[in-house]
Amino acid sequence: MLHQEMMFRFEEPTVTLTRSGAGLTEPDANITTPGMSWSRLVVSVFGNVLVGIVLLGGLLLAPQWLGRVLGLL
Image 1 (cartoon, rainbow, N blue to C red):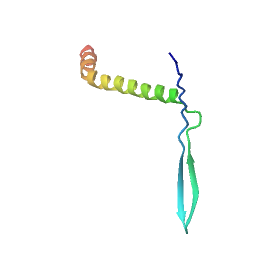
Image 2: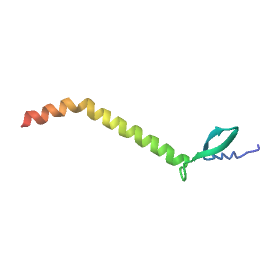
Image 3: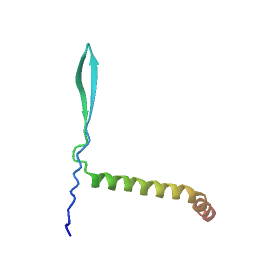
Image 4: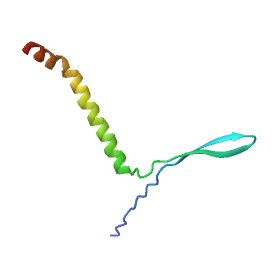
């Protein structure tokens, strides 16, 4: 049986904003993410989701621990 290895190659996305005037299109800005790999993107998104869950949990539990703290005072 022939085993074929698949190679995935991701290229960094580049967006070029153009400004058209008098029939000319010149590149205005080149938006890139230098050094931003897919693994860093996944870790960043996962971290943001984790922080969001922690903050939401803190807001939901705030009345409970505020009541305890104020009850101790």
